[in-house]
Length: 287
Image (cartoon, rainbow, N blue to C red; front, side, top):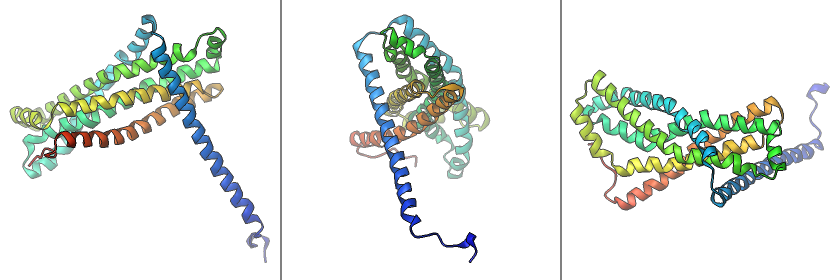
């Protein structure tokens, strides 16, 4: 029998299987250790948040970079998302004879889901990656080690201001995304699709209430905290070299985005249960 098709000796199987089990165990232990490291990092950040007051000259530059500089991209994204919702929903509503109720679906989708998630995604892409790259560069160039050698806590000076900026300003960015999305959906529906503005806004007021708006704003606090903690953690634990900085920035966005979607799922389930508890008659109907 040729050597290329000779059967694998039975003695090799246990060793191969043991190696696979060892690799799986090492992967699992690495992931568990990583989650624990992020948890410790988060508790340290929250501890310094309440232990010492932040200086205004440190907070304001971070607030400007996180909030003011993110407004244009968030506003533009919200405007076009509202238009896209109008384009994609009109055909189905027209087939049912419910064109005038298009505004209820557009505005409800924006304030409950798309506005908060898109604002958080833009924040993770623009701010989260930048924070990871900046802190990663400081780690590679040993600036963080220099802070520690001088007796200063780097989490207090570098992480807490960024955490506060994301936590405080992401609701404002979400409100901007909601406003521009509602405006974009209305402009396209009224000017292009010819839907009467009175019925458009009347149905929007009927089917979108304060709870829907507050539900989206409530989610954003968790999104902002997740973006700041994940991005700063990747920057603090950056690998040496330019490649390590780039990998930290990429991983910061990817992990933040996945965490945003996971949080959105579980928060949405919980908030829907809260809504059903206080409104037992059930959801509002379009028909």
